[in-house]
Amino acid sequence: GKPPCSLAPVDPLKLKALSMGLSKELKILLIKIESAGRQTFNISEVEEQRIPLCKISIKNTATEVIRACKGTRVKGKFKESFVLPAFSVKPNIDIDIPIPREKLNPPTPSIYLESKRDAFSPVLLQFCTDPKNAVTVIRGLAGSLRLNLGLFSTKSLVEANSDHAVEVRTQVQQPADENWDSSGSAQTWPCESSRSHTTIAKYAQYQASSFQESLQEEKESENEEEGEQTSDQSATTKIIKFGTNIDLSDPKRWKPQLQELLKLPAFMRVESSNNMLSHVGHTILGMNTVQLYMKVPGSRTPGHQENNNFCSVNINIGPGDCEWFAVHEHYWEAINKFCEKHGVDYLTGSWWPVLEDLYSSNIPVYRFIQRPGDLVWINAGTVHWVQAVGWCNNIAWNVGPLNSYQYQLALERFEWNEVKKVKSIVPMIHVSWNVARTIKINDQDTFKMIKHCLMQSIKHIQILRDQLVAAGKKICYQSRVKDEPAYYCNECDVEVFDLLFVTSENSSKKTYVVHCEDCARAKSPSLAGVVVLEQYRIEELMRTYDSFVLVSNTS
Ligand SMILES: [Zn+2]
Image (cartoon, rainbow, N blue to C red):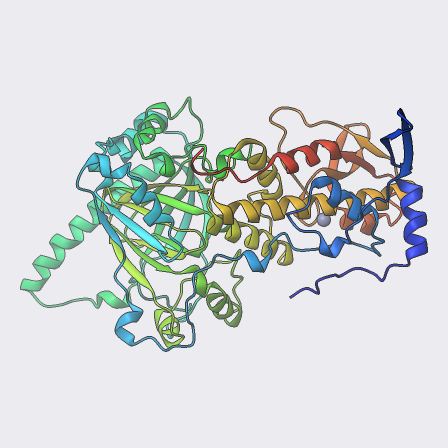
């Protein structure tokens, strides 16, 4: 944990001098007094009540936060977490109690809806987003809601946009619970696949001919059974192609398909007011837009958690099934260690867990079949990997239901990504401010976490601002424009919020590059040639911060 007050020791004299130098203001209070029947005024100097920065909490006003920042001499870079462990809402899962073998294969929560109305019940949302439920399958949801999944069949896709781009993964077909190393002698974790590109029409042709071939093989093997066995099937390695990450974001190209998905309950939809991804302000391909997957048997989506631990929705279009494996978020670090041991990067590499390794580490694994029309809800942070059993298409996207568990996991991964120098696809600071501006929060845990994040954000901005000004660096205010994206550092991919360190890489072409403070200083310690842009007035952020309050459920 971090020390409660991670600041340099404060010299009271210097502090006084600093504060007078920076905030040239003397507050005077006029007090009306009666004196011998006449009203006069008494002038008194107000002692500014300054709370030490380490005592500041979300109970304080923005003014108090700013004042505390101004009154604190921060030596060097100010860096504190946006997550407060005391606010954690993670479920208590005891990792030390050995789980009997049969319980390491727990049944997957499967919901059978009695009626269409049940899909829209708040109970379903509550169940799916319960931190204890890693994964939920909603059986036959497409049927219950009369979704026309035929719109996503290979035939319809070819008719709609045959030339559309498809990313292809070339893989080795193998049983779902096996992953052999290249020599074929042992099970292993890494599962590399090579990448190429094709079109929907061409993949459709491949998918169809793969199906025809297998029918043919089936026929031949039936004939062979009558005669003598000629070949050992298990010895042959079959190479397959998986059509992945097909972008269905364009509303003009995919209008009927996208319209059909509006029939889903709000919390599962691509866009909804309580979905954090609807408050990013711009498109994040595959997260707040739909992606399509075209599969033949054996097509593998390796193990992963979603970007920033967001939830995901996946519908099997059919005609074949998919097999899923899922592990609760609680165990991700144990899985991370297995990846490290096998030399594959947990966040960016391709790996397929060896089930025996998980069981021997006391990690329960959900394993289930997703049939056509079934919707799989992957809860926040759930580690999962998927393999096609038959020939099928799937559609999927992410959602970020605004609850405390989702928000906490998203912020935690935001910070872990920074440690691992991996880009957070969801700009969580930008999203947090947008949420505070637009959404009324009535859940106390969620409110406290967001408020804390905003407070930390203000602290970082104000302290950095004061340091820049004290060093004589000019800060240029440049208000954000409509649809302006969130910014990331060009070098380290960290989100850069409000104070942008901009360089002009090519003055004639007028290309500007955004950096974080660290990377800007790495290039030029004095920030020579770096323009500091400020996208929000501090007063604006203070107003948003103070206006963001817990809304009572009854009002
Ligand atoms: Zn950087």
